[in-house]
Structure formats: C-alpha cells, structure tokens
Amino acid sequence: MENKKPRLLFVDDDTLLLETLKTTFWRSHVVETCTSPLAALELLRSGKRYAVIVSDMSMPFMNGVDFLRQAAALDRDAVRIMLTGYADLDTAMAAVNDGVVSHFLIKPCPTTNLKEVINTCVLSYIERTTVPDYDIVLPAPLDRFVGISDIVVRLRAMLHRLGQVDATVLFTGESGTGKSLAAEVLHAVSPRSKKPFVRVNCPSLSEGVFGAELFGSVRGAYTGAVRDSMGRFMAAEEGSILLDEIGDVPVEMQSKLLQVIERKEFEQVGDHKTIKANVRIIAATNADLEQLVSQP
Image 1 (tube, rainbow, N blue to C red):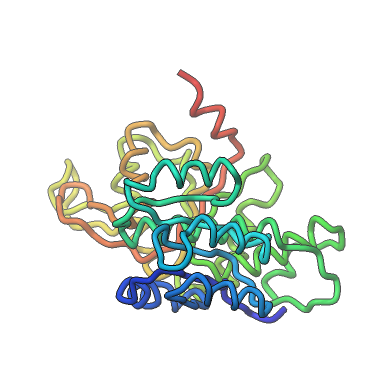
Image 2 (tube, rainbow, N blue to C red):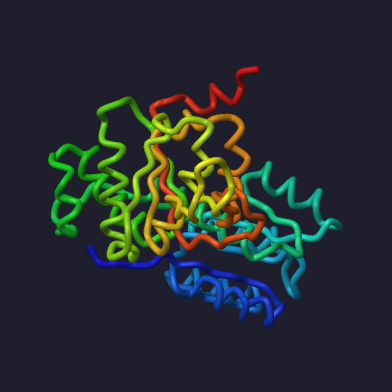
C-alpha cells in the first residue's frame, strides 16, 4: 500500500490564517488551501479528494454552508468542518442538523483545538473508508495479525493508515482480542517507531503512586523521594505510550490524565512546572466506558 498522508483542504479568505494552518499540519498531512470557495469547488470537480474539508462561514461570492453543501455532493466521504463566529452560530447549528457540516468551531479557534478535532475527523474518515484489499503488500509489523478474513484484512489496512495520523487512539474489546498487540503494531508502523513504546498497566498502579508513576516526581515530593524520578510519559518522549485498561484509572487521577490527553502537558508530583509531552497516547479497555460515564 502506498504510504499516503491524509489530505486536508482549508478554505478561508484570510491568507495569514491559511499560512498558519499550513505550518501546523504539513508534517503529518497533505495540505491544500484556497482563498475562494469557487476555486475549492474546482479542485473537487477536477477529482481531488480529501479526508477533511475545513471552511470559514463568511467568505466572498459564497458562504460556508453553501460551499460545504456543494462540496458534500462532490466528495461524499470527506468530513466537513465549519469555522464560524458567534453571529453565525444558529446558521452553523442548522447546517449540522441538516447533515451539511459534521463539526463547527467558534472563531478564533486555538490551533491545538482545531488539530485535535481534525485528528478525530481523520480517524473517522479512515474507519469509514478502509476496505479489505487482498492484493496489497503491507509492512512487516502488520503480519503479526494472522488471517485472511475480511475483518483481519481490514484491521491491518486500518492500522497502516492510522499509523500516519498522530492522534490519540482508543482500542476497545473483550480481554484476549488483541488490543495490546494492535497498539504495538500501530506504534511500529508510525513515524515514531524508532522511539520508545511504553506500556502502562493501569490496574496495577495504586492511587498513591499513580501520579508519580505516570508523570514522575521531584526530590522531597513525598516520604522516600530522595531523588527526582522520571515518569512513564517522560520515558515515552517522542514515542508512544499505551494506557492499558484505562477504564480502571482512579477517579482522583482522571482530571490530570485528561490534561495530558487534551493538552499534551503535565506536572511532576511535587512540582508546579508544566512539562510539554511529545508522545502519542494509545489507550485500551475491555470496559464499556459510555456505560461507566452514565452511572451516578
């Protein structure tokens, strides 16, 4: 299979914003930009296809809703995102209800938020568009999943595509179905494959040591802390970390874990200095997380 990065199309009449978006996404995606919705439609009519199309609401010649409605007819698989101001909020919500827009974000939108939404949309696109292909030769790590059924072939192809998207991934399923193996393979086929792969068995960590194990601690943070200690996230720097059985994370630690998942930053136990984490987070669980969240 040809190693292709996900393709993104940004449409906005703000040229400075488009340059910022190019700088943000070019390493992990193929990025194209248009300052006019009419020019963007010509790209789609020429046969170009994208994983995600991001459009501003207010533009000359055509508004974002009309553009995305026409874009949807030309490229049904693309996930469509609208950037809108508060004045256009009702219009954006109506577009979501009509199925024209998949997501909308309020401007000004922090780049980190947009990046997380786009990564999520790319994962959705990959899941929907990956089909079994028995004639494609895939990289060696994917051979660890043995089988010729449609499900296995589709899984291998999906992992290969997910490897090129530097987004957080959650594997769910019963014990023994290969979630940890899928995480290892995902790391092995990603650009981070030469860097560490760190596994954390969440149920094995008690509440008292959970923070120190994940984020590290500084000397004097607690009784017996005679030196600085590097946590699992620091050990996985530039690589990947697997949070196995994430459904068993203590409630008291969930907010700190959410911080590192959403913002890729954390603090060591006993220190208030914020540390940036350059790490891909992969999680796995055999629990029904939606059911657990709904419980009082």
